[in-house]
Amino acid sequence: MAHSDIDQALAAAHGRFTESNPASHRQFEEQARYMPGANSRSVLFYAPFPLTIARGEGATLWDADGHRYADFIAEYTAGVYGHSAPEIREAVVGAMQGGINLTGHNLLEGRLARLICERFPQIEQLRFTNSGTEANLMALTAALHFTGRRKIVVFSGGYHGGVLGFGAKPSPTTVPFDFLVLPYNDTQTAREQIDKHGPEIAAVLLEPMQGASGCIPGRLEFLQALRESATRVGALLIFDEVMTSRLAPHGLANKLGIRSDLTTLGKYIGGGMSFGAFGGRADVMALFDPRTGPLAHSGTFNNNVLTMAAGHAGLTKLFTPEAAGALADRGDAMRTRLDALCAGEGVAMQFTGIGSLMNAHFVAGEVRSTDDLALVDARLRQLLFFHLLSEGIYTSPRGFVVLSLPLTDADIDRYVAAIGSFIGEYRALLPRAN
Image 1: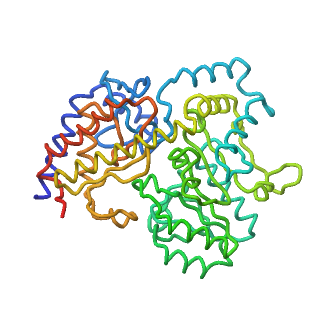
Image 2: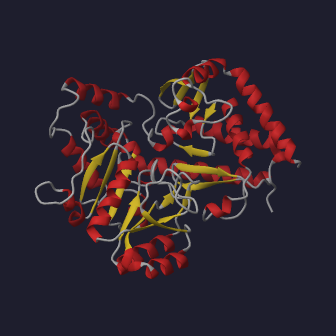
């Protein structure tokens, strides 16, 4: 199929989108006067302009033009509870009635800390932050001071927050630590390089499933090799479970049977509020004990009562370990249906992931790293995104799909049907399965 055919299809999709969303267009133009690109969060921008979301309820969103969507992105995994869950709302209002900024230890932070430590047994002690980005920065800082070393092993395609992103090398906004960037899921290279640089390595940081680069699961042998290699050279293994902690009752690493030295958390655990946490071995976390430790860890809102209350309510009343397991099962079943549909239609399209997180890719064969996605035509992802919007489904321009608790079986059926209609409409533009 000629290159121009995809361009023409995408231009037509843009035209229909622009015509259907004049209020969002006006909002974008007005906000662009005060924010570059009308934006404070790059992932939310897409051409020709992003929708302005006016409100949400359950798993439903409405935009500024009044269009209604089933929410299949759920705040990029933070929104597991949907929008305005009564249990979360009541917890937040109750906390506000007791005073918002209390300038001291409060009654709520200890119970959430205990709950998290009990849920994720590799976390013996923890400290709160305001985001997963901060949590990863603090975990790396702990590793540097605990080991007295400077080098940090990370992996191509890894994303650990706004200042910790990696392609083949660190992104331009990544903090200037001494990083060694290795290929994801390449067991042999990881062993060789960690052994080679062993005396210099403070930490090995990775997600057990890479999220932002396309829901690429870490192979068990690869993750086990990293645990063994880190132990052998005296480095700390840090699992970023900001996303993956939702993929099993007690987190993905626990399900896989691999115990990290430090774990970072964020997203949904704060009940939809700003949240992050880092924790793990008590001897490492003792660095931050103000009675004896050498490291200070500050943050005005680290223990804010709104997050502490919302997080506890969410984990105890809604996203219990049993609920996490059930949502993961629903996601696995949905992904199986989608892959069977794509295979049956004979197109090179698949959904990678684990549990309630998945990503659409226009490629055949196993996806083990971002290298396997290098030849995917990004315009096809855009076509899929705008097609789903036209079907009343709000998702991610990169094909990322996130399930939340309020989604119904009918919503999932609707998404699967929309993939079928997408293939039907654009079959001539899609790569064929071998």
